[in-house]
Image (cartoon, rainbow over all chains, first blue to last red; front, side):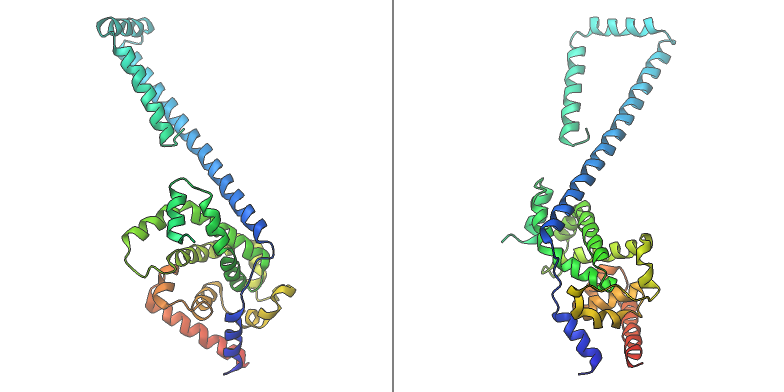
Length: 108
Length: 177
């Protein structure tokens, strides 16, 4: 066996170990938890921005359809509730389901 | 003792603390791998290990998917997957960490008394660049097969054999000098 091979064989036998394994594991898991929290904050921010944009778009479209008249929108809503009394309940139910689904999917 | 795959599945099912067991199981392995790649740089080896675990947690779903779809050798599957992540982390660290520059410049690495046994090896692999060092260590220290290294590094088997052959030749020539 040459000196070269002996060095390789010798290194194969070496079992490197961390001096402070518990501290390393704690630091690693803390880092992972920190990154998870950061990712969740970023995700919530993105969802928030998307929801705001959606609301603005819906409001703008509603206004545009009502000839840019706020009273027109209010009248339309009043008529909707008068004609379909359960519309508001269904809308609220849909909102609750949407929020619960978003929580389940950890979006918010 | 739970298998690696079981721990991964439990982690993915929401039991994040199970990943701690995997970290404990493979921390010495990754640290040793890092030491060999960095030529005995303990701090950089720790950084590499920690970042590898962080990435592994981030991409854990991809391991689970591969595991379900692959029928290849199941032994040490998680370790092989983790090694691939460590290799990528090592390459990224070299790009971003200025403190690795001394190793690339072939200056003397800083040894610590705890790694005295490995001095000869660190000196031996010093002529190799980072990519060849990774391949050499995986093949000749950890005894991974060429197909396994190909999977871990994303290099084709033909290119891999060629690089390994050249690296070995270069080290033997350098060592005889």
